[in-house]
Amino acid sequence: MFSGVSGLQSQSSAMGAISDNVANVNTVGYKGTKVNFQTLVTAQVSLTQYSPGGVQSAPRMNVDIQGLLQATTSSTDFGLSGQGFFVVSDQAIEPSGYAYSRAGSFKVDKDGYLRNVSGYYLQGWPLQTWDGTTSASTVTYNNDTYMKAYRNDNGDLFYINDNAVDSVNMQPLNLNTIGGTARGTSTLSLGANLPKDAPIGRTEKTAALIFDSLGSSHNLLYSWTKRDQNTWDVDAMPPAGSEYINMTAQDGSTYYSAGRLDFTDIPQVAAGGSTTMTIDDGTTTYTYTFTDSTGGDGIVDEVSSSNGASSGPYTFTTLSEMLDDLSSLIEEDLQVLALAEHGGATGSVADSTGKSSPSNWAERIAGENSILIRQYSEADTITVNASSLTINSGADPAVIQDESYGIPALTAASGTWQGSWINANASGITFNGDGTVDTIFGYDETIENDPRTTMNINWANGALDMDGSSAPPGGPAITQFWGNYNATDGMQQLAGDYQLNYVTQNGNRFGNYAGISVSDNGIVTALFDNGVQAPIFMIPVATFVNPNGMNALTGNVFQQTDTSGLPVVREAGSAGAASVAQATLEASTVDLGEEFTTMITTQRAYSAAAKIITTSDDMLEELIRIKR
Image 1 (tube, rainbow, N blue to C red):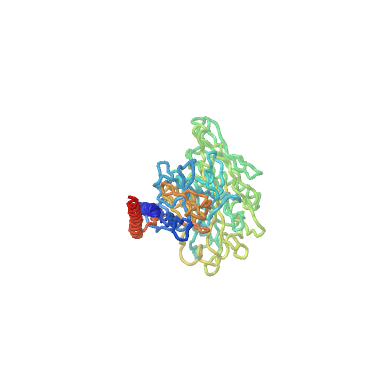
Image 2: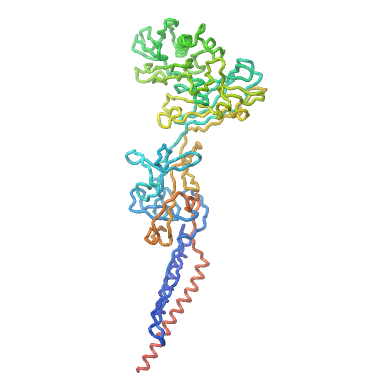
């Protein structure tokens, strides 16, 4: 009889598992339970009589069985293909514990955290651009290196130990903290045809759109001037809002540099007073005095230079007239400096360089309230200081470049220097007889095998300087590509008119957060409506030696046990860990056909066990009748 009772209990347990399986046939990530049976054996102490035992049920949850991945329309649905689990917690911040789940149906909660339907929060590793720290755990994505790190509440950078599962080394993904983004230009490629039949001295212009680190767009204007057959020179206009540009050759030598001043209004002073700006080369300082000569309204109407050789003072009534006068004064003074360094007759551009274009060291920029200042020296930095020029009683600057800055000298960086733009024999680009690029800044493939050059730009508008620095206030410089040597994949010189073939750059305007994408290795990338993609997070996968030994909890999650072993946290898709599939969910592993078939056999087994009990009862009743 007791064997029959054990049969009822075991088959009842099996029916319970079947019930759970059928009830969870549509539960995301559910792992079906299968009940196996094992014998209960009573030790036999007699050779002539049998001592019955019974049966025991042994439920086994098939946690390691892969469910089918089904496509969804939600970008925050994640499925795992392979072994392992998502790391989840009962609370987003300061969780009381961690669990493991295959249920990847996450949604954004009211605070921006990813939370699944059971109320568990996704945990993982925040990503930041690698700062070069060798101890940081890094990951490469799209040829860029990122590190697993985040800034804590104190603003300190914390480097994650990616082997630990705790509240310090695991963080929740919060989509509300993703703001807008902009990306400054760091690569710029040009392709154009410079006409072979252009007369000597002909200038062609190429305008390239670039972006600073704040997402503002600017025009970088290149001027190509034909110097000789197959030989062209190049200079560039500093964009509005910049302090200076510095164009360097393949070896880092400076070929061309220039600065600018952008005026917002005529400077103002106390009635009858004056103010100054200066330009110096480290030896000689020229002071430009702006005076309210009428003594009436405090708006300056006269400018002069401290250089006795310069003409002036000049009087003016409009900002345009002032800029014309000031640029003339600066040009005269720079000619004095150029004459002292290079010799000659006048110190003009043509006299110092033997080149007819450009015509001036300093000039008014056409159509703008700005002055361009070209570097003339291969030894001295030109320092420009207009910080004293103000308006509105000194409350606002009259010049965007309201801090002192220096225009870099035209200096060599190596022993193979081919000269700067002020050298008569130096050139920006030369061509072979078939129109392909021969040299860039005098360098060919035998001297510098990489044809890429650099444009450095210092900004006065608050953006990061494009000076090649790795940390603020600097940032990446612009890498220029004008084509490979002996190829027509960039600049070329052929018959016909000037024609711009392409301008490409990698900067972007400001963009708002638009969504996320997740790679198969678990890297979460924020998408912005300006086309920028920024990796922000990495979803880890926890694996166990014996996942079937884990303890199941309500909410389709599991806990580690002594039987399962400790979790090993890995990057998705590595070392046997599952890969992550976005916009998919793992279906339940329950097969209804199999469950209904098992249900029938379980019912029959239960009935048979019940028959044992009723038969045993009949036998006992017969025994009692004998006594009567």
